Image (cartoon, rainbow, N blue to C red; front, side):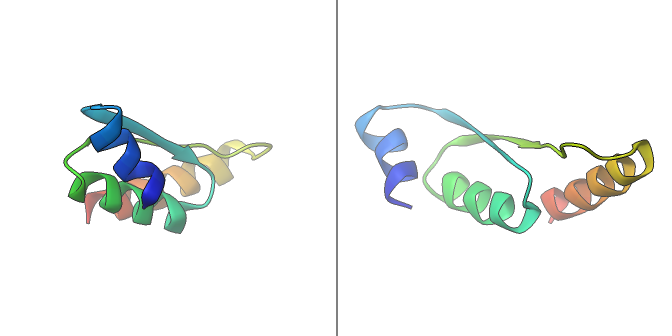
Length: 67
């Protein structure tokens, strides 16, 4: 929260890219950034996964991002 508020208010940014592998953490960070007035670029990634694992992961991330 502190970092996101610093980005939004001290650095006067208007957008942030939230990236990582753990979907739950990405969602919390994205909601926090949105509440701070930032435009959020939600960027999940999955390393070392098969095509099917990646497809499933991205479907889950899309569902969570849609909420």
